[in-house]
Image (cartoon, rainbow, N blue to C red; front, top):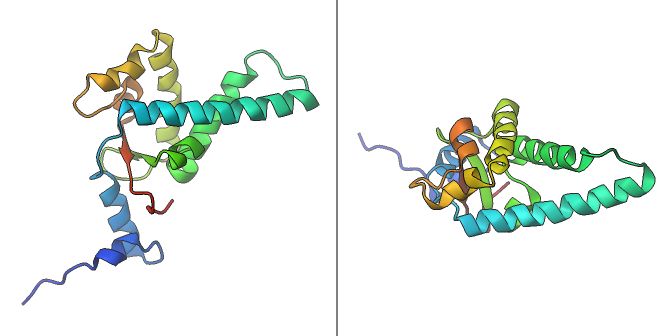
Length: 156
């Protein structure tokens, strides 16, 4: 009895559940994102949060430290919601768990909080991407995630 073949187009269709699971498992098979791409995405996200902070600060005086809280909430929220951020969408990056599953809120929270540690040690945890064979920063290792580069037409 011949085995059924999956149609290549079905992996890109988010409407059916088998295709949805194929999309999830396919994410982990994409190439790991380079440091340059991740840095570019972070800079774009930083610019976006700076603009939002300036707008909000004009309406209500924000406390010291509100910017860093906004940056953390922005990343955790977007990682949970879409598996990427606006900068990640522009740079074609997605964050995925090592088993290929999408991030949950708990995964995004652990990744966000541990990224503070990666940055706090003079950015060494982020620069670790340059030395790591899997291109994982310290916060990726702690949270069990990869950042992958996806094709431009990959669905959100």
